[in-house]
Length: 239
Image (cartoon, rainbow, N blue to C red; front, side, top):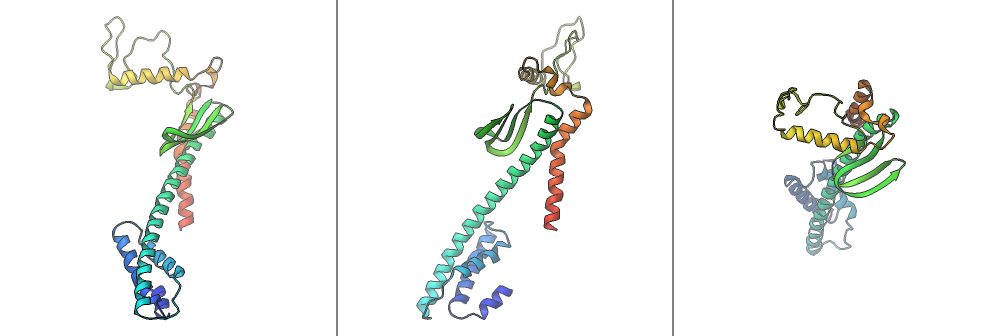
C-alpha cells in the first residue's frame, strides 16, 4: 500500500510501470513461480530500474508499460531460480550439519571414519584429509558418514541363524536342517561382510561395534541433535 501511494504521487510513466509490474507479479504468484512477498519485491525492482522518458505522451506510456512487463517477467524468473538455489543450499547445509553430528563424536571416540559425504550418486568433488575423504555428490538428498565396523561379526561357535531380525526370519535350531535364507537375512550378511572388509589389519579396536552402548547412542543421536540445534537457531532468527 505504501509503495502504491508513493507511486501515485509520482509523475510521468511510473504509475503505468507500477500497474504493469503489479499485474505480471500477481500472475506469477498465482502460477506458483514466486511467493506472496515476492510481488512487492518484483514491483520495487522494476520501479528502481525504470528511467522516466523526457517527454510524456501516449507512445512513451505504452513503451514504459511494455518494458515494465518484460522486466517483471525477468525478475520472476530470477526470483524463481534464486528460490531454488536457496532451497538446495539450505538442504545441503542441513545435511552437512547432520552428518557432522555423527562425525565429531565418532572421531572423538576413536572410530575410524573413512568418508564424510553430502549427497548420493556420482562424486562431484572430494578431498582426503588424514584418513577421511570429504566430498560432495551429485544428488543433494541426503548424506552419510562411513565408519569401519558398523556391523559386528558372527560370534564364534554360535548356532546357525538365518537372521538377527526377530520374527521376520526363523532361527535354525542345532541339529536341524537350516531353512532357506530370506532376503533380509541375505542383506544382513552382505552388510556384515562389507563392514568386515572396512577394518584394516591391526585396527579392529577402532571398529564401531566395539564401542560401549552409550558411545554408540551418542554417535547415532548426534545427527538429529544437530538438526534440533539448527531448528532453534532458525527459530531465533525468524522470531
